[in-house]
Each structure stands twice: as structure tokens, then as C-alpha cells.
Length: 173
Image (cartoon, rainbow, N blue to C red):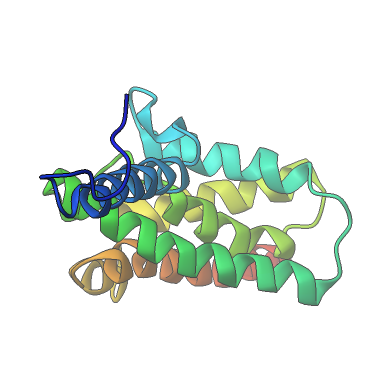
């Protein structure tokens, strides 16, 4: 049974107990967000799994106004910065492979430019994965930024490059 606050002879026990519970809840929530509900724990190429899950999630989204959609993406990015920083610090790993919220946000940047045609969605997916894996400048430089910002920014830049690549493909094809 948990002791009540300030039991005789144990001042401050409630503070430590509450702090521990809040810390555990924060770590649990951060892991759920950073790994996109544990998809990042799938074996072999978690970034690809995360990108694929982002496609499915995006495709199943109800019709949203453009403003609401981009507000969601911005908020996912900001929450991703915090969650990935917490998980990175917890695991003592600058960029844990299980953290895939960055792939999710990067894909959600490019997918609106693909439309609902599966061929263009596949092209967006391939473009994003190529830029995310090859990391041309400044993606590699952004990845070196410490903490959640670096984890998230390299995939945002890969998403922007993918928009350019997808637009180029649409023009030439």
C-alpha cells in the first residue's frame, strides 16, 4: 500500500513518489510517440517501417483543411523533437533507430504533393527513403545537431528534398 503524504518519519515521500510516477509516465508517452506506438521496434529497417506506416496513416486520414493538416504536421514535429530527445537521452544514443517519428513527419511533408494516386505515393516514398538513406548536404549536417532537433531536422530536410524530387518527376513524366 502506498504511504500517504508526509507520513510520520518520512517527510517528502509523496514528492519523490509523485516525481517517479510522472517520470515513468513521461518516458512511456515519449517512447510511444518517438517509436510511433512501437512500430520503431520492428526488426530490420525501422525507418522504412515508419515511412510505410506514415503512408498508411496519411492515406486513411479524413479530408482535412490544408491549415489543419499543416498544424498537425507542425505539432507532430514539435512533439517529436521533445519525445525523441527524451528517448535519445534515456538510451544514451544520439539517434536511436527505433525513433521513427522523424520519418513519419518527413513523409507527411511530401505526401500532400503526391495526391491520392498510388503510383505518386510510391514515388514519394521512394524519394523520401533515398534522401533519408543517402543524406546529401545539408541532411547529414542536420543529423549531427544534438538532441531531438537533429533527429527530426534531417528527415524534414529529406522531406523537402523529396518534394523537389517528386515535383521534378511530375514535370518530366
